[in-house]
Image (tube, rainbow, N blue to C red; front, side, top):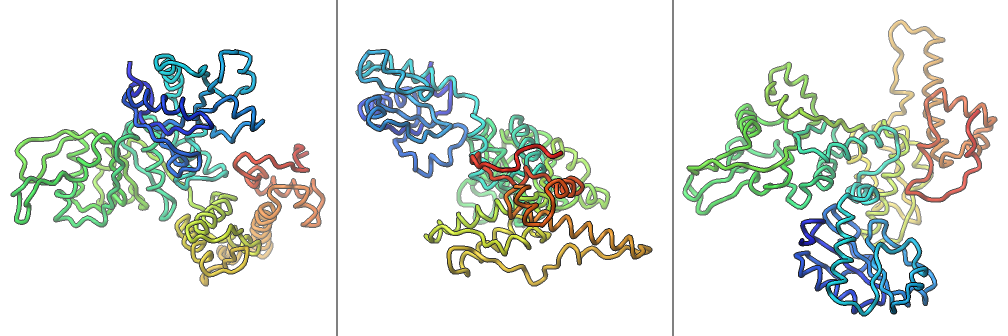
Length: 470
């Protein structure tokens, strides 16, 4: 039984003072068909592991005793402990750290058995690996709307059916499609994105299905096409609503049979691809307007994933802003910087019509244009508070308008307040000059949950308001 049939065939291996055992492990794994890369825990490839990859750490027992502490073990890693003698008592020095142990020196057969046992038990991706993969793709957040989407992504990645991803411009449809691909069983094969709006109608068939040499003037060699490039993987059709009527017919025929014929070809080929489409348009409305084929819509819309706009994601806007600041500071080799507190008020109140893409662009500019230890970003020129954006409906009397204005103000103020205090209700009440219970009732009235503002990524912060609301 070969190892690559039981687990992902790409292994990243790093070791701590166990060079001889690590070299033997590399030989064993490569002999079993695995692609092995010797690396360090800081390697960027390790930090962006795909689900079909395995991270293997080899730790020597004497090194552990000398250090008197365990290294920071990646939660996704498989850990092999190397004992310097056959004294079983040494195992207690590595409590709850290693998945397997070998006594060194050991022969190749014993090491192969241990490695196979570790790898065969790691077929199912660890939840931490799933979360890390999505975070590396920029899919992060803590709001209820986002967590619902995260659960949907995890669920939809397990099947192979066609899916449409909907959402406003800039909500992260392609990033989400990549997350679906790399969490699926097709993750070892290519992810091929196509912007349907950028494909001229005259070239659409050639770009999708390719051509044979001599199919038309200038066709001097065979060209496989994008469908062939995506073989075994995922074909992502972005802005699918922009397809011309002829392009829609062509796509419908392909979806019906998964068969195609390159231009100039005499035989039909069958494709093994998953189709993921995306659109920021209302396809239901386009179907009713007869600008998008109803039968194609039903073919594509077997599964549907709707991404929430940024304005509905609560504290996620701050999380994303800080993520982009960190990313661009690293890209431009700048020291670590923080988000200026004065920017928090308007980024929570702004509607973000361009969603995550607009936020990223504004943070990018802020990193380049700001000086000092913090990044300050002024609101856009067209920024208008949500309070001012909410006009008085016809027939509304003074008291009704006043109540609505107060409710709008309270909601925006409380959101900014909870963001500034990290979800600490006691601190928020002190800052607002209100009793804690009174503030709690206001938060409940406006549906604002303190959990949406707590520090993320499992940080162990202590709050003075962890007791339940009464």
